[in-house]
Image (cartoon, rainbow, N blue to C red; front, side, top):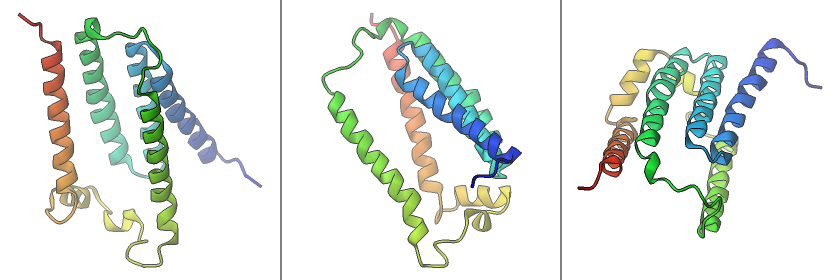
Length: 173
């Protein structure tokens, strides 16, 4: 039987914030309201990081994603608002997005359930033992043998998104 304790109640609260905000993002037709739902969803994710005893990641979630990325999205929406047409709820390629969503869900299920059946002791080691401190996390992010490539790819994608927003927002003369 499920025993309710304060930590479980707070977990469900943050899970509802995260999932409810995500549902609001994808179902709302107003772009500004969608960005606010994104902020709510990211705040719920930060709360889940706190429950996982990862206060640094929670702070990064709040400062970087809520404080910078969500605000950047709001500014991009405000700059390109005259170019958006939200007349149609569904477009002709809705089935492609449905197929991609099902494939992504399958990959996520494999990624979450797959490591449970891994017999290798090194591979099933918890992340907290591999990256115990903030200094270890910093070294892992910039070490050439660890996470420097995904870190650089993320920075290039953010730069490309910013350049794309500027190109779209500028007026044609």
